[in-house]
Length: 150
Image (cartoon, rainbow, N blue to C red; front, side):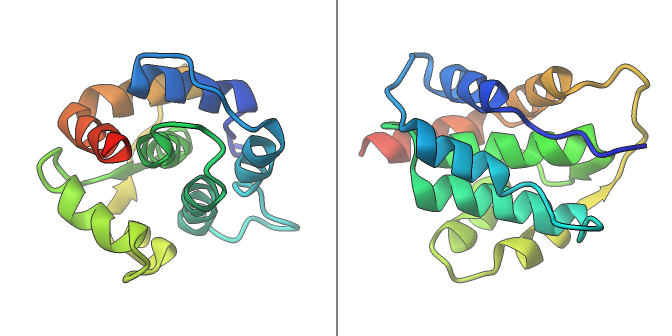
């Protein structure tokens, strides 16, 4: 089965869902960040591709608000849409994500340590994957959004 990828519109929708408001964004930065999920040639591993997406969204800061929460949801959705699931609870995410955001742990290493295979539904699309992440991690997402504000 070919990999499923996030579109620019998916990431815009994620930012809207996590921040509850439409925010200004820099289109070129957003496009570059979203392209980070792709790999040249044979895919280098979903954990590495999701880590590049996460890192790209963090570093390029395409949105005026909630880049960290957007990056987390996008990363989780990319994994889930392709048969990998973050195994952490909502309460565990902040302690896991903080060292990666601050560059103390590599994104790929941090992600590969907390994912496991999950059986995909034949109808599991990217939007359903995004909604699953939003529903599974509401407190973590809220904390990431609040950190953006302050």
